[in-house]
Image 1 (cartoon, helix red, strand yellow):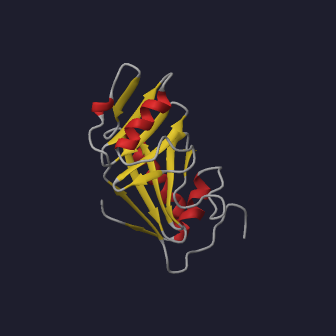
Image 2 (cartoon, one colour):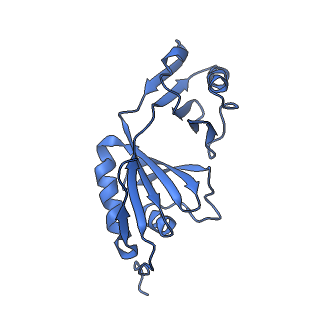
Length: 179
């Protein structure tokens, strides 16, 4: 097989879709970030601010620690009640789109799009990575051995989806309706 070629799909194609975000908020702070964010997250049922690699979930609420003083939280409704002068919350629900990928070829297709190791040994369910895809910052979440979500800026979602589709053609592609 020549460089750049990928094996033809057997019978299981890549399944690509989208899903609606459920209230995505960014928490940011300064000096007392861990204390303030930890208290807010505990009120939402999460144990604390978490790590830079593993998502935290409790019921419908999920958080991702994306920087020392920054978190993303989805599924908790309006978090504006936690806002203060030193702890800022920003509703990103309309600024991000979620692209879903699933099926046996998902990891192979992702490896064509980003330079990070997305093998099953290196990228486990429950983990997330912040990656660049075609120069666009993307939060890539591993939901299961063959299931992934890409949180992309809404303005770039169609371009990223098209890039995924182009790279997935040798594997076969099936689209899933909006969830």
